[in-house]
Length: 379
Length: 85
Image (cartoon, rainbow over all chains, first blue to last red; front, side, top):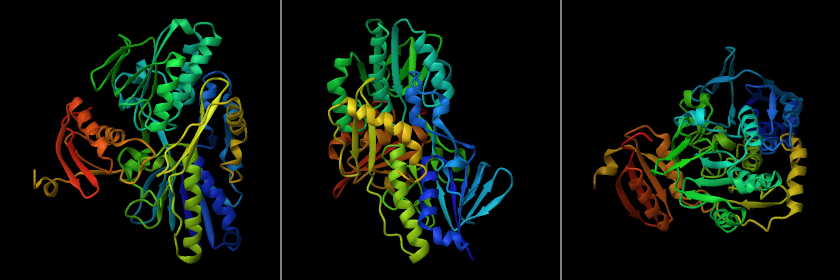
């Protein structure tokens, strides 16, 4: 009797796992001893870090999209129907079209999404660049902006934790290029008492933000936005006026996770080393879907995927799951329109941003072009 | 306060053994905002220097600290979400 691995989610984590597992378990797949299914609610695979560049007109939507089917190993079955319920007691995934998929091993790769509706007035009064339509709307506002107050606010949790830094540095350069930097009053806010969750990055920001004319306001947790008065108020009682509000909305996980009782707000309690759902022996969790206290980033999903694939293969072949995730994350950080730095860290090793350079910037741009090799399991 | 931890079911946020990422106050903010009113959150941290930061934030946003317990090598902070935020 064949074993079945069902992966719910066709983002970077789900796709890498499907492809790496298909490569590693090729003999079993060919003999019909293993079936790998990916369940996704959309046919396209979108490269989300590209939105930062779309905001400045440096990337077009079509450059950031591929068909998920084209990225998947031919021996992986793709089901383009949303999962509406996961019954972990019966080992079942229920799809919207009524199909019930039984699994031996389940991978939850359902991701996260901005939830501006969690902050009163944010949808009406704010802008964000974490989704295509919102990004294009913000781009339009920025291109027509002649000067005034810009406030950037950050909700927790959110994906791509370095993006608020990147967009701040890039906007500084971009307004300079447009000759209106002296007319722009830019304020970066952050929810805790320093400029970033990663302490070395917070220190890096404290050193470099003044050189970029970026004002700061820490301990600022968005409470509400008043679109009429154009103000944003924090839980801590501070109100800031804005002409353009750029928000990183707090994120939520997938509705199917919440509806299935697998995790508050769609984030699944996960063992930080084994990456198994807490209390489960046959459910793995990857990327943004976990509730782990680490970055919700593509590279996190990438490094986690390696561990999950090794453990699934080992479990299916030997009944053992010896591999452990060490919290590894890697992020490029744009520090303007022409320079970048990077950070690499794990559970026990804090990051240490290197001196920004044009070389690292070009390396990031190159990776943006070759990203597709990552979900394919090649890079 | 002595019987408090036996009587109340709390949502546990355990960030012991992680030194790289969001500090305890950040993880605490995430959980506090996600939970419904009246939820009790229990934060486990091995960073003593961050305990005061968490307590200050709870006070600043008018929520309620129930208890702080020093265990061997780590701290348990219990707080109640007394109003929506």
